Length: 266
Image (cartoon, rainbow, N blue to C red; front, top):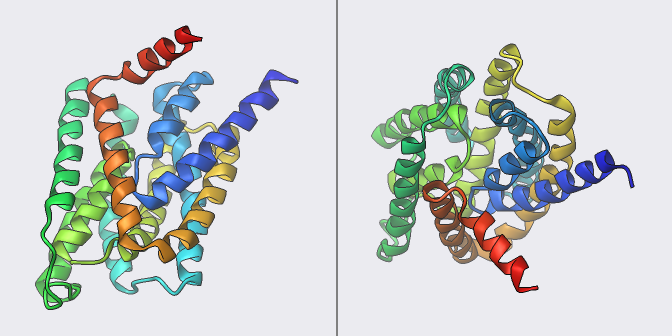
């Protein structure tokens, strides 16, 4: 079989897995970015190319959540507009600057703090479970999502964790509904980020569109499936993915060394 055909097949398979992970929690870009780089795409271009798959994945995911009656408008629109402003700034920085290893390590700590906060959060009373999406909490969300967009436009990987933390702590929104908001916000700001990456000639369109086939399929399936599973499953997947991402950020070669050690056993 032609090696390029194999590359395309691997892209679709990795995209399928990443799409499901992105919808359930976040961190799917930890799979897609290394895969793109492995196929010879420069890191800066891989960062832009990955956004094509994110956009198409989230179009299908938004429709998947809506088909199950899960949405939050116009609240999601306000957050998306704020995030888009931040994403444009973040994407401009990403096109002209390379991310720092120290920043990755700081992000790894942040991810672990996120999961500790969500796991340790005490059970709330019915009064505390009421959503807070108006008044000062709406404005706090809008401000927070500017910074979410700033980070998402710059790197993207792991932004889902930050969105889930913001929505659960500021606005007290369930994880299932937070995931629906997350994919809509990421869809909107990613379009703006892609425009910046395109202007900077930092996108491989062929690989991006092939990858999006897998991402979109995984996003559609998992968005519908996760609604019926509730917050419990999402929290478990979230814990696993945060820890996986934190290890990757602190020890970039950990999984490569582990895979080689396993292969040597055979």
